[in-house]
Length: 248
Length: 143
Image (cartoon, rainbow over all chains, first blue to last red; front, side, top):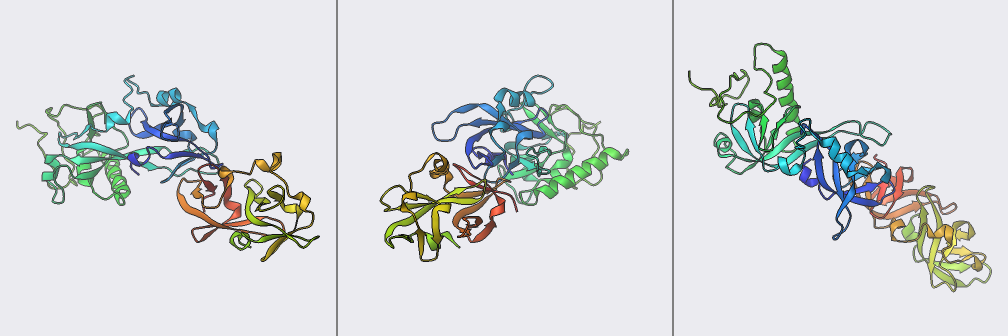
């Protein structure tokens, strides 16, 4: 589901009371999972609450509500922010920093600007009230860049497309790095996106275990102009760009 | 028995055979899944009668032996009174956070007041799935 659909969802207890609503989605430090939510009061005039909701305390995230057992599930908003604090202390956790960032492949292609974040909700594992599975960030919805649109028959510049993400991400306030292979899995179909993500991640995993092919993507963002020594794996789409490589 | 078959029925005293009111609503305890009382209008005093104080809940009338058992909401009943505790027309959420529809009717045992099912947009949701009734929604266990 898209995180834009999560904002403003009511937070509802098992007793049926709407005790808050989602204000912002807070991402874990590496940007790969949802850490929790900041909350606002219900109603037009209600402001932000001092309480937040950690993902581990959520019973379920559905299409129409965030379900919690009771108001004990809420914790201080600073706890939620702390759960999101990144190792480098820069707190690149806010949804606002992801939205509007440019998605770059590690071969230096600008795929477009992030307009939404796609999450996959783990099914709560059992009768207990906490969801043990993480709420995985699986993709970005982007407004396609000119260079991406030029290589796709069904897209123009600005067309909204979905880019699958690897398990591990490199995120700065400026760029979001994805492996070049992600481009081959770009789709405009949210219903089939889960399969795209699974396929893409399976391909990345097999690349990691096959010595003859590409090394895992660099953990830090590289400037767009930097040359890369990456060699495209053989199963990449034929039209995959090679502009990242400098002539020798 | 369905609520829509009872709503609007007359309340008749079994001692005087007079009509003393009209059935207007019910109070539901979600924890015990029972209707604890019926709510009436046009009654001379009070608005509620506990299920145990009713003589019968039939298809054509609700009967009561002692009309002085019709009372105002006391401490025990007032916990089930009000919009937050109403189930009819309220949205239904599963514990997974998905909306299933709205409560259109309920099914109950007229002898005991035990809730048997919620009728949610044409589908019956068994009463054992009921988790809570609150200000926003009726919460039911996911199927």
